[in-house]
Length: 266
Image (tube, rainbow, N blue to C red):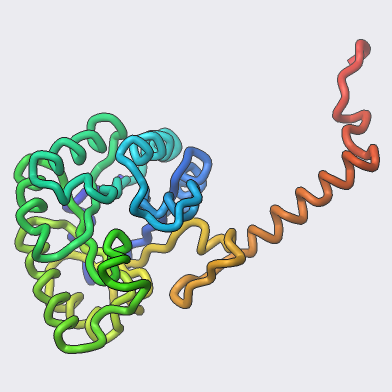
């Protein structure tokens, strides 16, 4: 299993591979595939729980899913995503909730969104022995403030905010930073400026690693195909076809057949 020190040491030497996972079977597959880091993202609100965005996700929901992921990936570095209002209300709440991830769910680290505005919280968590992954650029928990899903770093003010945020997170003790939907130029600048790894999602090839959402890379949502996500398989189509065959077999009497039936003789 990787640890924080090894992750930092890989910067500039080897690309980090991170994927989100939300349950036991997906975590087991990710570990068997050799993924470096599993993020139990609050994106489970969109992908698994059917919420419109990540804002309704609770700590209890995150703990349940993270426990399942840990059971499926005992040897993989796991990051728990701090949900909306689990840390913004102050250092005491941040410590309590980050501690829950470590104690109750067995994470190796936590992730929280924001730059300069959360640097003090990051510093305090690290002081108390809780490794922190930062997250700047497009931050889903601030979707209403940002005004939708918008690329960050397009103008000088946005660029300066991102550069200052990245530096503040590094100085606060974060071991890595997720850059989401940041322009390629600013991503390159940040990656070269800081000594900790950057992990990109929709931020181009200059990051020290990449992360994709489980359902996006497996093509499980036909209604959501973001520009930055590469679907390596159309699992939605595969699953739907299998279920259609099952439906037809049941209705037509083809299932269960003799090989799927128990009798007194066998």
